[in-house]
Image 1 (cartoon, rainbow, N blue to C red):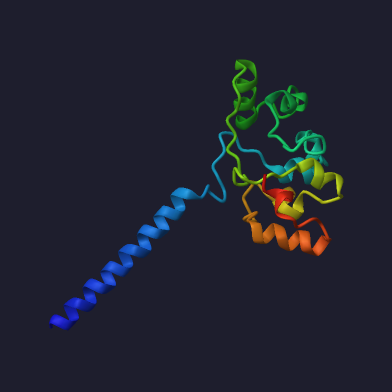
Image 2 (image 1 turned 30 degrees about the horizontal axis):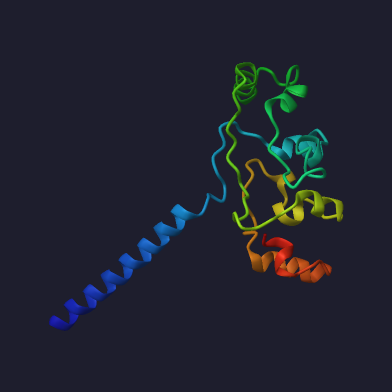
Length: 169
């Protein structure tokens, strides 16, 4: 009887540790598919309308940042397109108020990592190589971890620089 009680305590303790570690990991990692304040169906804009990533993420080939577009870019079309849809009404309200939408970043490298969208775009990489098939997504989700091992594997495959100071500044 005493042996069973010891096993129960050990199993319960182990389960508690597993739950605690999982909960801590969930608190540390951003969501793979964060809820956005306004739905933005990339698949509609890319597949149906024919837009390209750089139509909205205009700085990707000019800057280290691709940037999340401001409402002024969206309103270039949505001043007159789909104005009666609930999500476009939210967008229009944000635009008129002058307040940013507050999009939630899906991808973010660690603070000690230097990453240049410009350098990668101008080298001929497609956005999908890091971000996955966003053009097919209703809600953008993270499909890669963008961890060091993942990046080094790509650099090795492409013959890109692998010295530490290429990415670590």
